[in-house]
Amino acid sequence: MSKKSNISTALWFIPLLAVLLAVLFLFVFWVGRIVLHKSTGSSSKKPIAQENVDAPAHMADVPAPIIPPATPAIEEEIPVPQEVIDMNEELEQTEQAEQAAPEVCPATTMAVKIKKPQRKVSYTPYQKGLLQCKKNKVFPCAWSDKTATDIKQYWLMSAEGPITRGIYDVDGNLKSETVASVNGTVTSHLDQNVMWYFEAGLLVKIRTSPYDNCNFHDWFFINEKGQQDVCQCAYTTADCCARSPFQTGMSRNYCMLFPSDKDFCK
Image 1 (cartoon, rainbow, N blue to C red):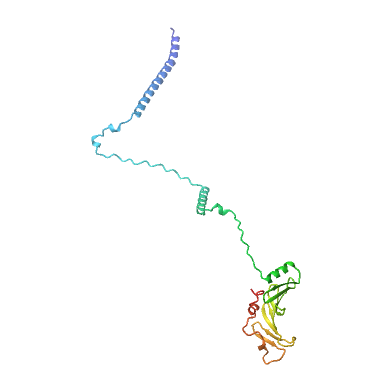
Image 2 (image 1 turned 30 degrees about the vertical axis):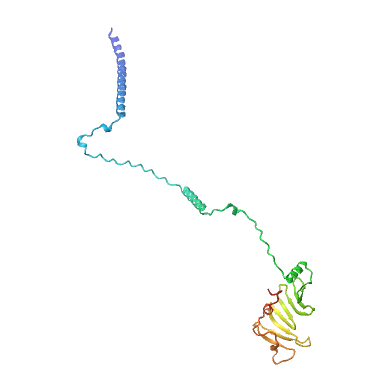
């Protein structure tokens, strides 16, 4: 062959040889890696029988080292939101209130209508007549009350009063006469031949008729202290005030002077 063909053949053979060597190197590397991997895995998976291993003679009396227990990892505490705390406190308060509240029987929560017996009011003949006159609104209005010994005759002159009561015996003779306001406050009281005058229920003066002449009278005036301060007699006497039916220490109140009057004194 010529010198030129030898050179071209050499140039073609060198790359081919390099490729073959590279392939061979890769194959050897791959096989070695597989073998190494299998040997390492088998040695790591082989159990070690600790009970069959004899400790060396010089280590028989040496205590085994104490291995402290592993300290668990401390988890970081996450703060609880204030809204959750408030909600839990509200739930606890509600539960405590429900436990403290007394149990209510359902029957007691129902409205029960109880009819109370009506109280019967007993009226005196005077009160019945007065109420009837006010109801009828016809004036003057009159009514009467008869007992075994007396006859009481009443007159109501108008809705505002006054009320006049005359007490007569069975023969029709006048024994007493009383005049009062519509609310029962006595303004005058005639008893036999003595007329008692009151203001706001208190005695202020007295008129007597002890003479044969009905136009002659004795007058006795009572002051606020309950004392007779002025006395006027039809006939002059040494002590006119001594003839008065009112004595020092007596009450000026009508109902204290005439406690037996059931119409105007309760």
